[in-house]
Length: 124
Image (cartoon, rainbow, N blue to C red):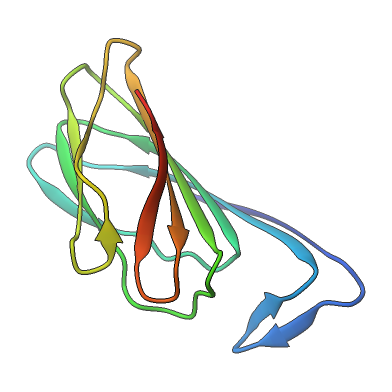
């Protein structure tokens, strides 16, 4: 299920099919994995992507090279049993794996630098 909310100001410019400049643009997405180490692709289409991820055991997050702009952000909230782990493809991300803690969740955010998604913050 994909939910999206977009609010653009009058002076927004569209480049490569994406709003650029003075805008506020969010994308919301729910994801889950099945048993076993799965690979899940994130496909952001807005400047800010928020993902709520139901983590069953372990997953590798991947990202196909797309039309993102430097400064774009991804925030992921992983929820699931303690000890479940998410890894991030080294091809697209600069981040160590993240593990669910006693709060049954882990949160990580990334900032796009023009080439890779760089870990910005994490909360365990």
